[in-house]
Image 1: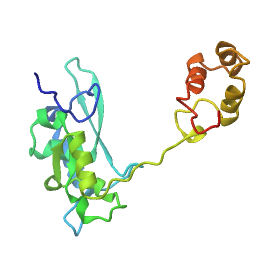
Image 2 (image 1 turned 180 degrees about the vertical axis):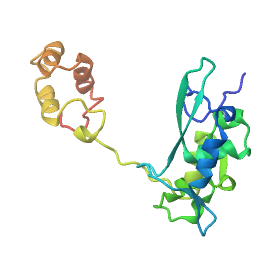
Image 3 (image 1 turned 120 degrees about the vertical axis):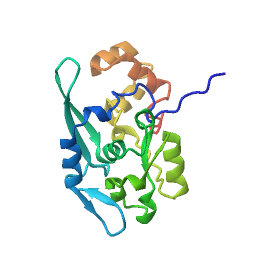
Length: 198
């Protein structure tokens, strides 16, 4: 039996990053924007994303002479240029922080840290396990009805579909609401909008 390879993200991986494509210009620019914190973390100056991470970028010419612009999170860029990890492992695994224990549980500012000594490689499962063990895991709220980002109809439409279950065919309902019949079927089979009375 072959052992399943655990990679950084489920599904198809993106283009790998290679150190040979990163000129000294981008490495030097990166280091110039780093700021040392009293707790040993190193933060990159600049805008922070909603998820707490910072982005970096670099350009290079590919084999065809085309200019390529690549984006990468700052902590991953730091891990790549540090020489601490091989490119193969870097591209296969997530880059995780071990300095999060220096921050309150609801403080995600540690994600800005680009200190290579505070970074390690692990699988998605390692990341989740580490998060749970440190008490940082917060179960996301269950979003139902219109609050669910997958919702394609309103609650009033869902209620109308339920009320007319045996009166109007699924195909006709789909035509009226301009949605797919499978959306109607999922409601009738109680797979979606389960919180509404039947």
